[in-house]
Length: 100
View (cartoon, rainbow, N blue to C red):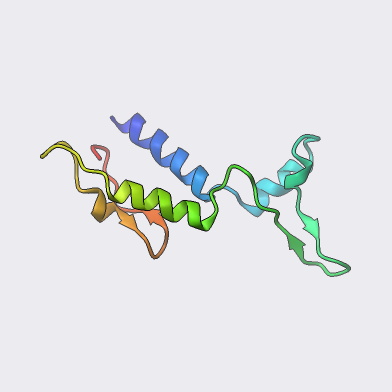
């Protein structure tokens, strides 16, 4: 039960962009693949742009996914209410237990 919850939470976090960090993008420079994900320097400044990764959902897609999860209905006493788990303001799932 705990393994399924961890896999689901990790996959959901990956799609929502929680694991798409600057450090991860810096590591992609060492790999010859995925050049389109490398940080791009903004002009002559020290600022870098992080291009959108194709595996991360866009804001409108995140809202649709969270609304679909929020609308899920399960048999009585099967698991907790998904309405309580979805935080639309922060666009994430919260308070998940291993039996949800």
